[in-house]
Each structure stands twice: as C-alpha cells, then as structure tokens.
Amino acid sequence: MAKFYCTTPIYYVNDRPHIGHAYSTFAADALVTWHRLSGESVFFLTGTDENAQKNSEAAAKRLGVTPAETSRAQVQAYVDEMSAVWQRTWDTLGIRYDRFIRTTEPAHLRGVEQFIAAVQERGDIYKGTYRGWYCVGCEAFVPEGDLVEGKCATHLRVPERIEEENYFFRLAKYRDALLAHIEQHPEFIQPESRRNEIVAYIRDHLADISISRPMRNWGIPFPGDPAQAVYVWFDALGNYLTGVGYGTDAAQFAQWWPADLHLIGKDIIKFHCALWPAMLLSAGIPLPRRVFAHGFFTIDGQKMSKSLGNVVDPVVSAQRYGLDALRFFLFREISFGGDGDFSEARLAERYAAELQHGIGNFAARTIAMVRKYTDGRVPAIGDRNLVGDVWARYADAFDRAQLHEALAIATELVRVGDQLIEQERPWELAKRGETDRLHRVLGELVELLRHLALLHAPFTPATTDRILTALGQEDWRSHAWTELQQWGRRTEGAVLRELPHLFPPLEGVPVRG
Ligand code: ME8
Image 1 (tube, rainbow, N blue to C red):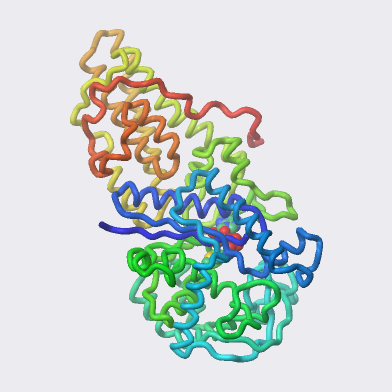
Image 2 (image 1 turned 90 degrees about the vertical axis):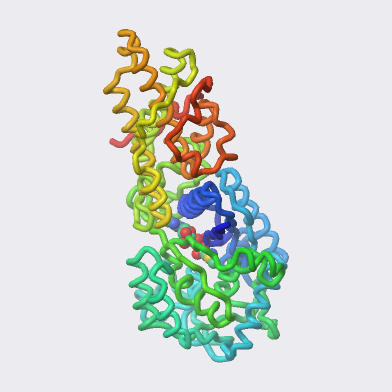
C-alpha cells in the first residue's frame, strides 16, 4: 500500500498560533485527507519547536525578569503551557494529525544525540570560532552583508554580536551533492520559482555553519560538551526523523521515512532545502521526497504584526464564520504557493456568494425538491455523467499540491447544478406532469450534490458529512474512494433526510465599503 508521510513546520511557542500558522496546518490537513481518502496509509506530523532562545526570552518576559534570571524549570513550565495551547488550537480547528511532537521530549533528545553522533562520525563537525551576528527573531546567524542599517531586515532589530568558540557543521562540503540532487529530482523543491532561488543560494553562498551556542539555561546539551547547546535549527529539523521513531523505534522509522512532503512557508526554505538535506547526506539518511513552500499573506494589505494589532486568531475567525468557511476561504482566496492577502471583508463576500448562495443554496434546493416531488425518495439516476473529467483534474491538482485549483474544480459543480436547475425548472416539469423527465433531473441533481460533497471533503469536512448524511451516505468513509468517484446509483431509492442550514446568513460582520 502506498504511504504518505507529511509534515508541517514545528512552530515556536513564544506566542499563540495565528492565521498564518493555521494556513500551513490546514493545508497539510487537506493534503493528508486527500491521500487518506485515496486509500494510502498516512502519517501526519506537526508539533512545537521548543529549544529556541526566543522561547526562553518569552518565558522571561512573561515572568518580568531577564533571560539570565530564569531557571531551566521556569522555561520548561512556560513551554509546557504554550505547547498545550498549540495542541489545543489544532484540536479545536479539527486538525487530524497523527503525532504532535515536542522537541523537549526525551525521545527527540535521544534521536538528536544519535543524529549528531552520525554526523560526527562522518567527520563533518569541527570546533571553530564564530564571529558575527545572531538574530533571535530568525534564530539564525546573519551575514554582515544582509543587515540593513545594522539591523536584521526581517525583524528590524539589532542582532547580537557574537564572538565565541563553538562547533561547526561542514555545510559547504555538500554544495555539489545538493546541486546534483536538486537537478536530478526536479520535484524536490516546489514551486519551481523557489527552486531557482535556492539553487542560486547554494551555488553562491553556501558556507559552513555554527551549530552550537554557549549553554545558558535552555537548549539541548551538545553531546560530549554540555557547556554548549545544540543550535536550535539543528535540533528542530531533526523532528521530522524523531517524529517517526528515529533513535527510538527502528521499525516505525523504516515504515515512514523518507518524508513524502515537508510543507513549509517560504520564510524557512533555506533551512529545509539546503541545511536539512546536507545534514541528512552527512548522516547517511535518505532525503525527503518533496519540500513545498507556500507564500505569505498579509492582513488587509499589511504585514501581520503585534504592533499593528492586526494579528488574526484562527479560533476567533472559526467561531465567527465557521471552521469550514474559514478553511474554504483560505484556499479559494490565496493561490497555494504564491503570496496573498487575508481580509475579513473578502471572507464575508465569499461566504455570502459561494457558501450561503452557492453550495448551501444548491444543496438545500436539491434536497427540498426531492422531498417535495418524490416524497424524499431518490429517483433512478441515469447514465448521463455530469461530472466529466472533474475527478481526473482534481487528482492532478492534488498531486501538484495546488490546493486552490482542486477547490476551484470542486466549486465548478455548483455552477453545473445551478444551470441544470435553471434549464430544466423542475417545478414547471412537476406542474406539467412530465414525471419521467422530472425524476431524471432530480436524480442527476442528487448525484451532482454527492460528488460536490465528496470533492469538498479535504476543505470543508463538516459540510461534506452533513450533505452526505442527508443523502443517506453517512458511511461514505468506509467505501473505497475510487468507487465513490463513479457516476452511479449509490443513492437510488434512499430516503433523504432534512439538511441542516449549512451556511446561515452572517450577522454583524464587516462588509467592504
Ligand atoms: O519558523 N502567511 O516557526 P514559526 C503564511 N520553528 N504562513 C505563515 C505566515 C504568514 N503570514 N506566518 C507564519 C519556525 N506562517 C520554526 C520552524 S521547522 C523544523 C521549524 C507559517 O513559528 C509558515 O508555515 O516562526 C511559516 O513557515 C511558519 O508559520 C513559521 O512558523
């Protein structure tokens, strides 16, 4: 059986999840749902990145003391509490992950130790002196030439000046091997535009990298030298291995590795497409099959930031609009892979036009007409296939991780259904007593609605369940997806149930103007 092992970034716990984090996690959930429904065995990993300096700074800030004054136990208590917030958020948002990994877990620590031992054995770690800048916002060493007026261009803060002895990883040694791998595996980095960016970076800028910092009160002790802490990215990237048993469960690891897809945002592509594969090459571990970097979105045209006060809490948005509506909006509005914008006014517009008056209306009308004209019993469904090549195009979009395309294909069926209703006007057929034709049309509408509900499953799972339950198909998950995709007679003779109001009108939400 084919397997699909998919990961999200593991998020820092120095703050609560916002809509950007939810976007990556919803995307992974949609992709994983598609693969799960396709009958593949799936492993979906997400979690929290806890050994970062920025987490210990956040803990100190919360306590109102300096980082130097906080104890390891205090930082641990903080990350315990915050990690639980993240996990609870994904639970509230219906994310069906298989494992939620925390990088402070003993199993992760063991795996990181084993990994570093393998890299050491290869002769790829040496002691040297690092002189330069470290940005805690990036959790990265910043080349002098990248500073703008002495500040990190992303975080607009002056980085820490560092001059210290620490351990280095021979990253530059892997330049040619990385370039060869990328050339031989064009699918490794997607979208393509990002691949070109990474190739240029590897070719022109790859240099050895410091992978330890002096141990303060936080981080994983460097094996054999507890006065140093493992550089956070060197431990965090390893979560993709330790999350499926590296260092603790060889059978599980053999079952899932290599990862089929690392889903990330474009901000962390260098770590995932240069440092990470080089680390794996050094340790003698096969590389992941694919890294897909989606774009970043702004909020009403502005960068999301605490100081602007425009940070969108996904749980609040889901409460206001409904979880399905939020997921639907994100993948309708933003091309997956490109940058975009999130705006509540646009969300409200799409909600009204495409959910309330689109899917909601079509489903309600179809079911109401069957209940009215045939006592709720689904008439015979003819052989005229009204979905055409929709499933083939949809599968192709998913194979390319083009989530917005897949969803756009799903929504096409609303138009097909609405047109059929307008052309045939079932109420007039009923009036004229054209029963055969009326029944044929109603059968086709029900079958269209069934396909429409299935196609929406990765995006609006609750809506899919509601529609399919009304069609008497509540056991749909126990059927093979390929069988469900056939145009056919599954619902013939079923007695339709009442459909709950799928997308009631929104009250008190902003309208553009
Ligand atoms: O970088 N638009 O964690 P992080 C879209 N711990 N996506 C966004 C976004 C936005 N405006 N803002 C954030 C880290 N994201 C590391 C990762 S992995 C081994 C370690 C998403 O908490 C996007 O997926 O800063 C981005 O890559 C991620 O959040 C960064 O999350």
